[in-house]
Length: 271
Image (tube, rainbow, N blue to C red; front, side, top):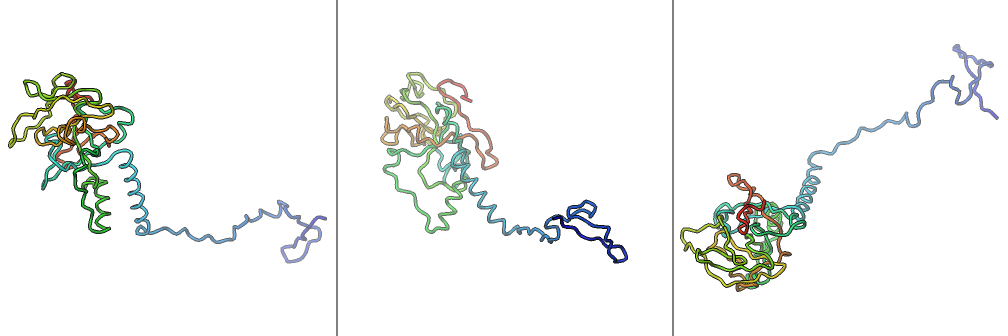
């Protein structure tokens, strides 16, 4: 059976000879489904409602970048003067540390590195003072992420002098450190005016494989592989403890610039 609809004349009467079939194009276009519905205008979130979300996203991204790619560290002491500036009561340097480089290459002599203090370096240290409350602890953690506060962990910054398998000792007749019996060229050494401008001597040490021998540029004001852990092989730092390579001084603005990785064994920059 076919459904039909009778047509009307414009005067309101019926025309029996005019019949319209459903879906007949002569009846005009059919309205689209849902066309009669009134759409509500889309509501926009206010800035203040979105602000907490933006802050959380920014903190998560900052954490991910600083955990796996690069991180800003504050220099807490003067052991790397004048390459890096740091001292109690002054404005210390903040340095950007590259955490990816040693996934593809090995640490080299001349690299300035940040590392976690190995057991022999920290066994006699007093643990860090914990913040007095949760809020202070939160600000401490956030500040350490962006280099505005020192981290809680025992991290150090020094320059690599020798790597695993090499021997190191001090000194020759010209008061230079020797690696594999050859004197080093160390133009970055800083002599504090109130200290003797002469390096302390130490016996030859064979650097164990998988470790590095590190020293501060402020040579007579640095507790490094010569003395940490009693010196010798206990003063070396496992490569796995290295957090990354210090690349750039980012703060304060007057100290902006790259950090020298001058290789003392080759007598030129390692790049």
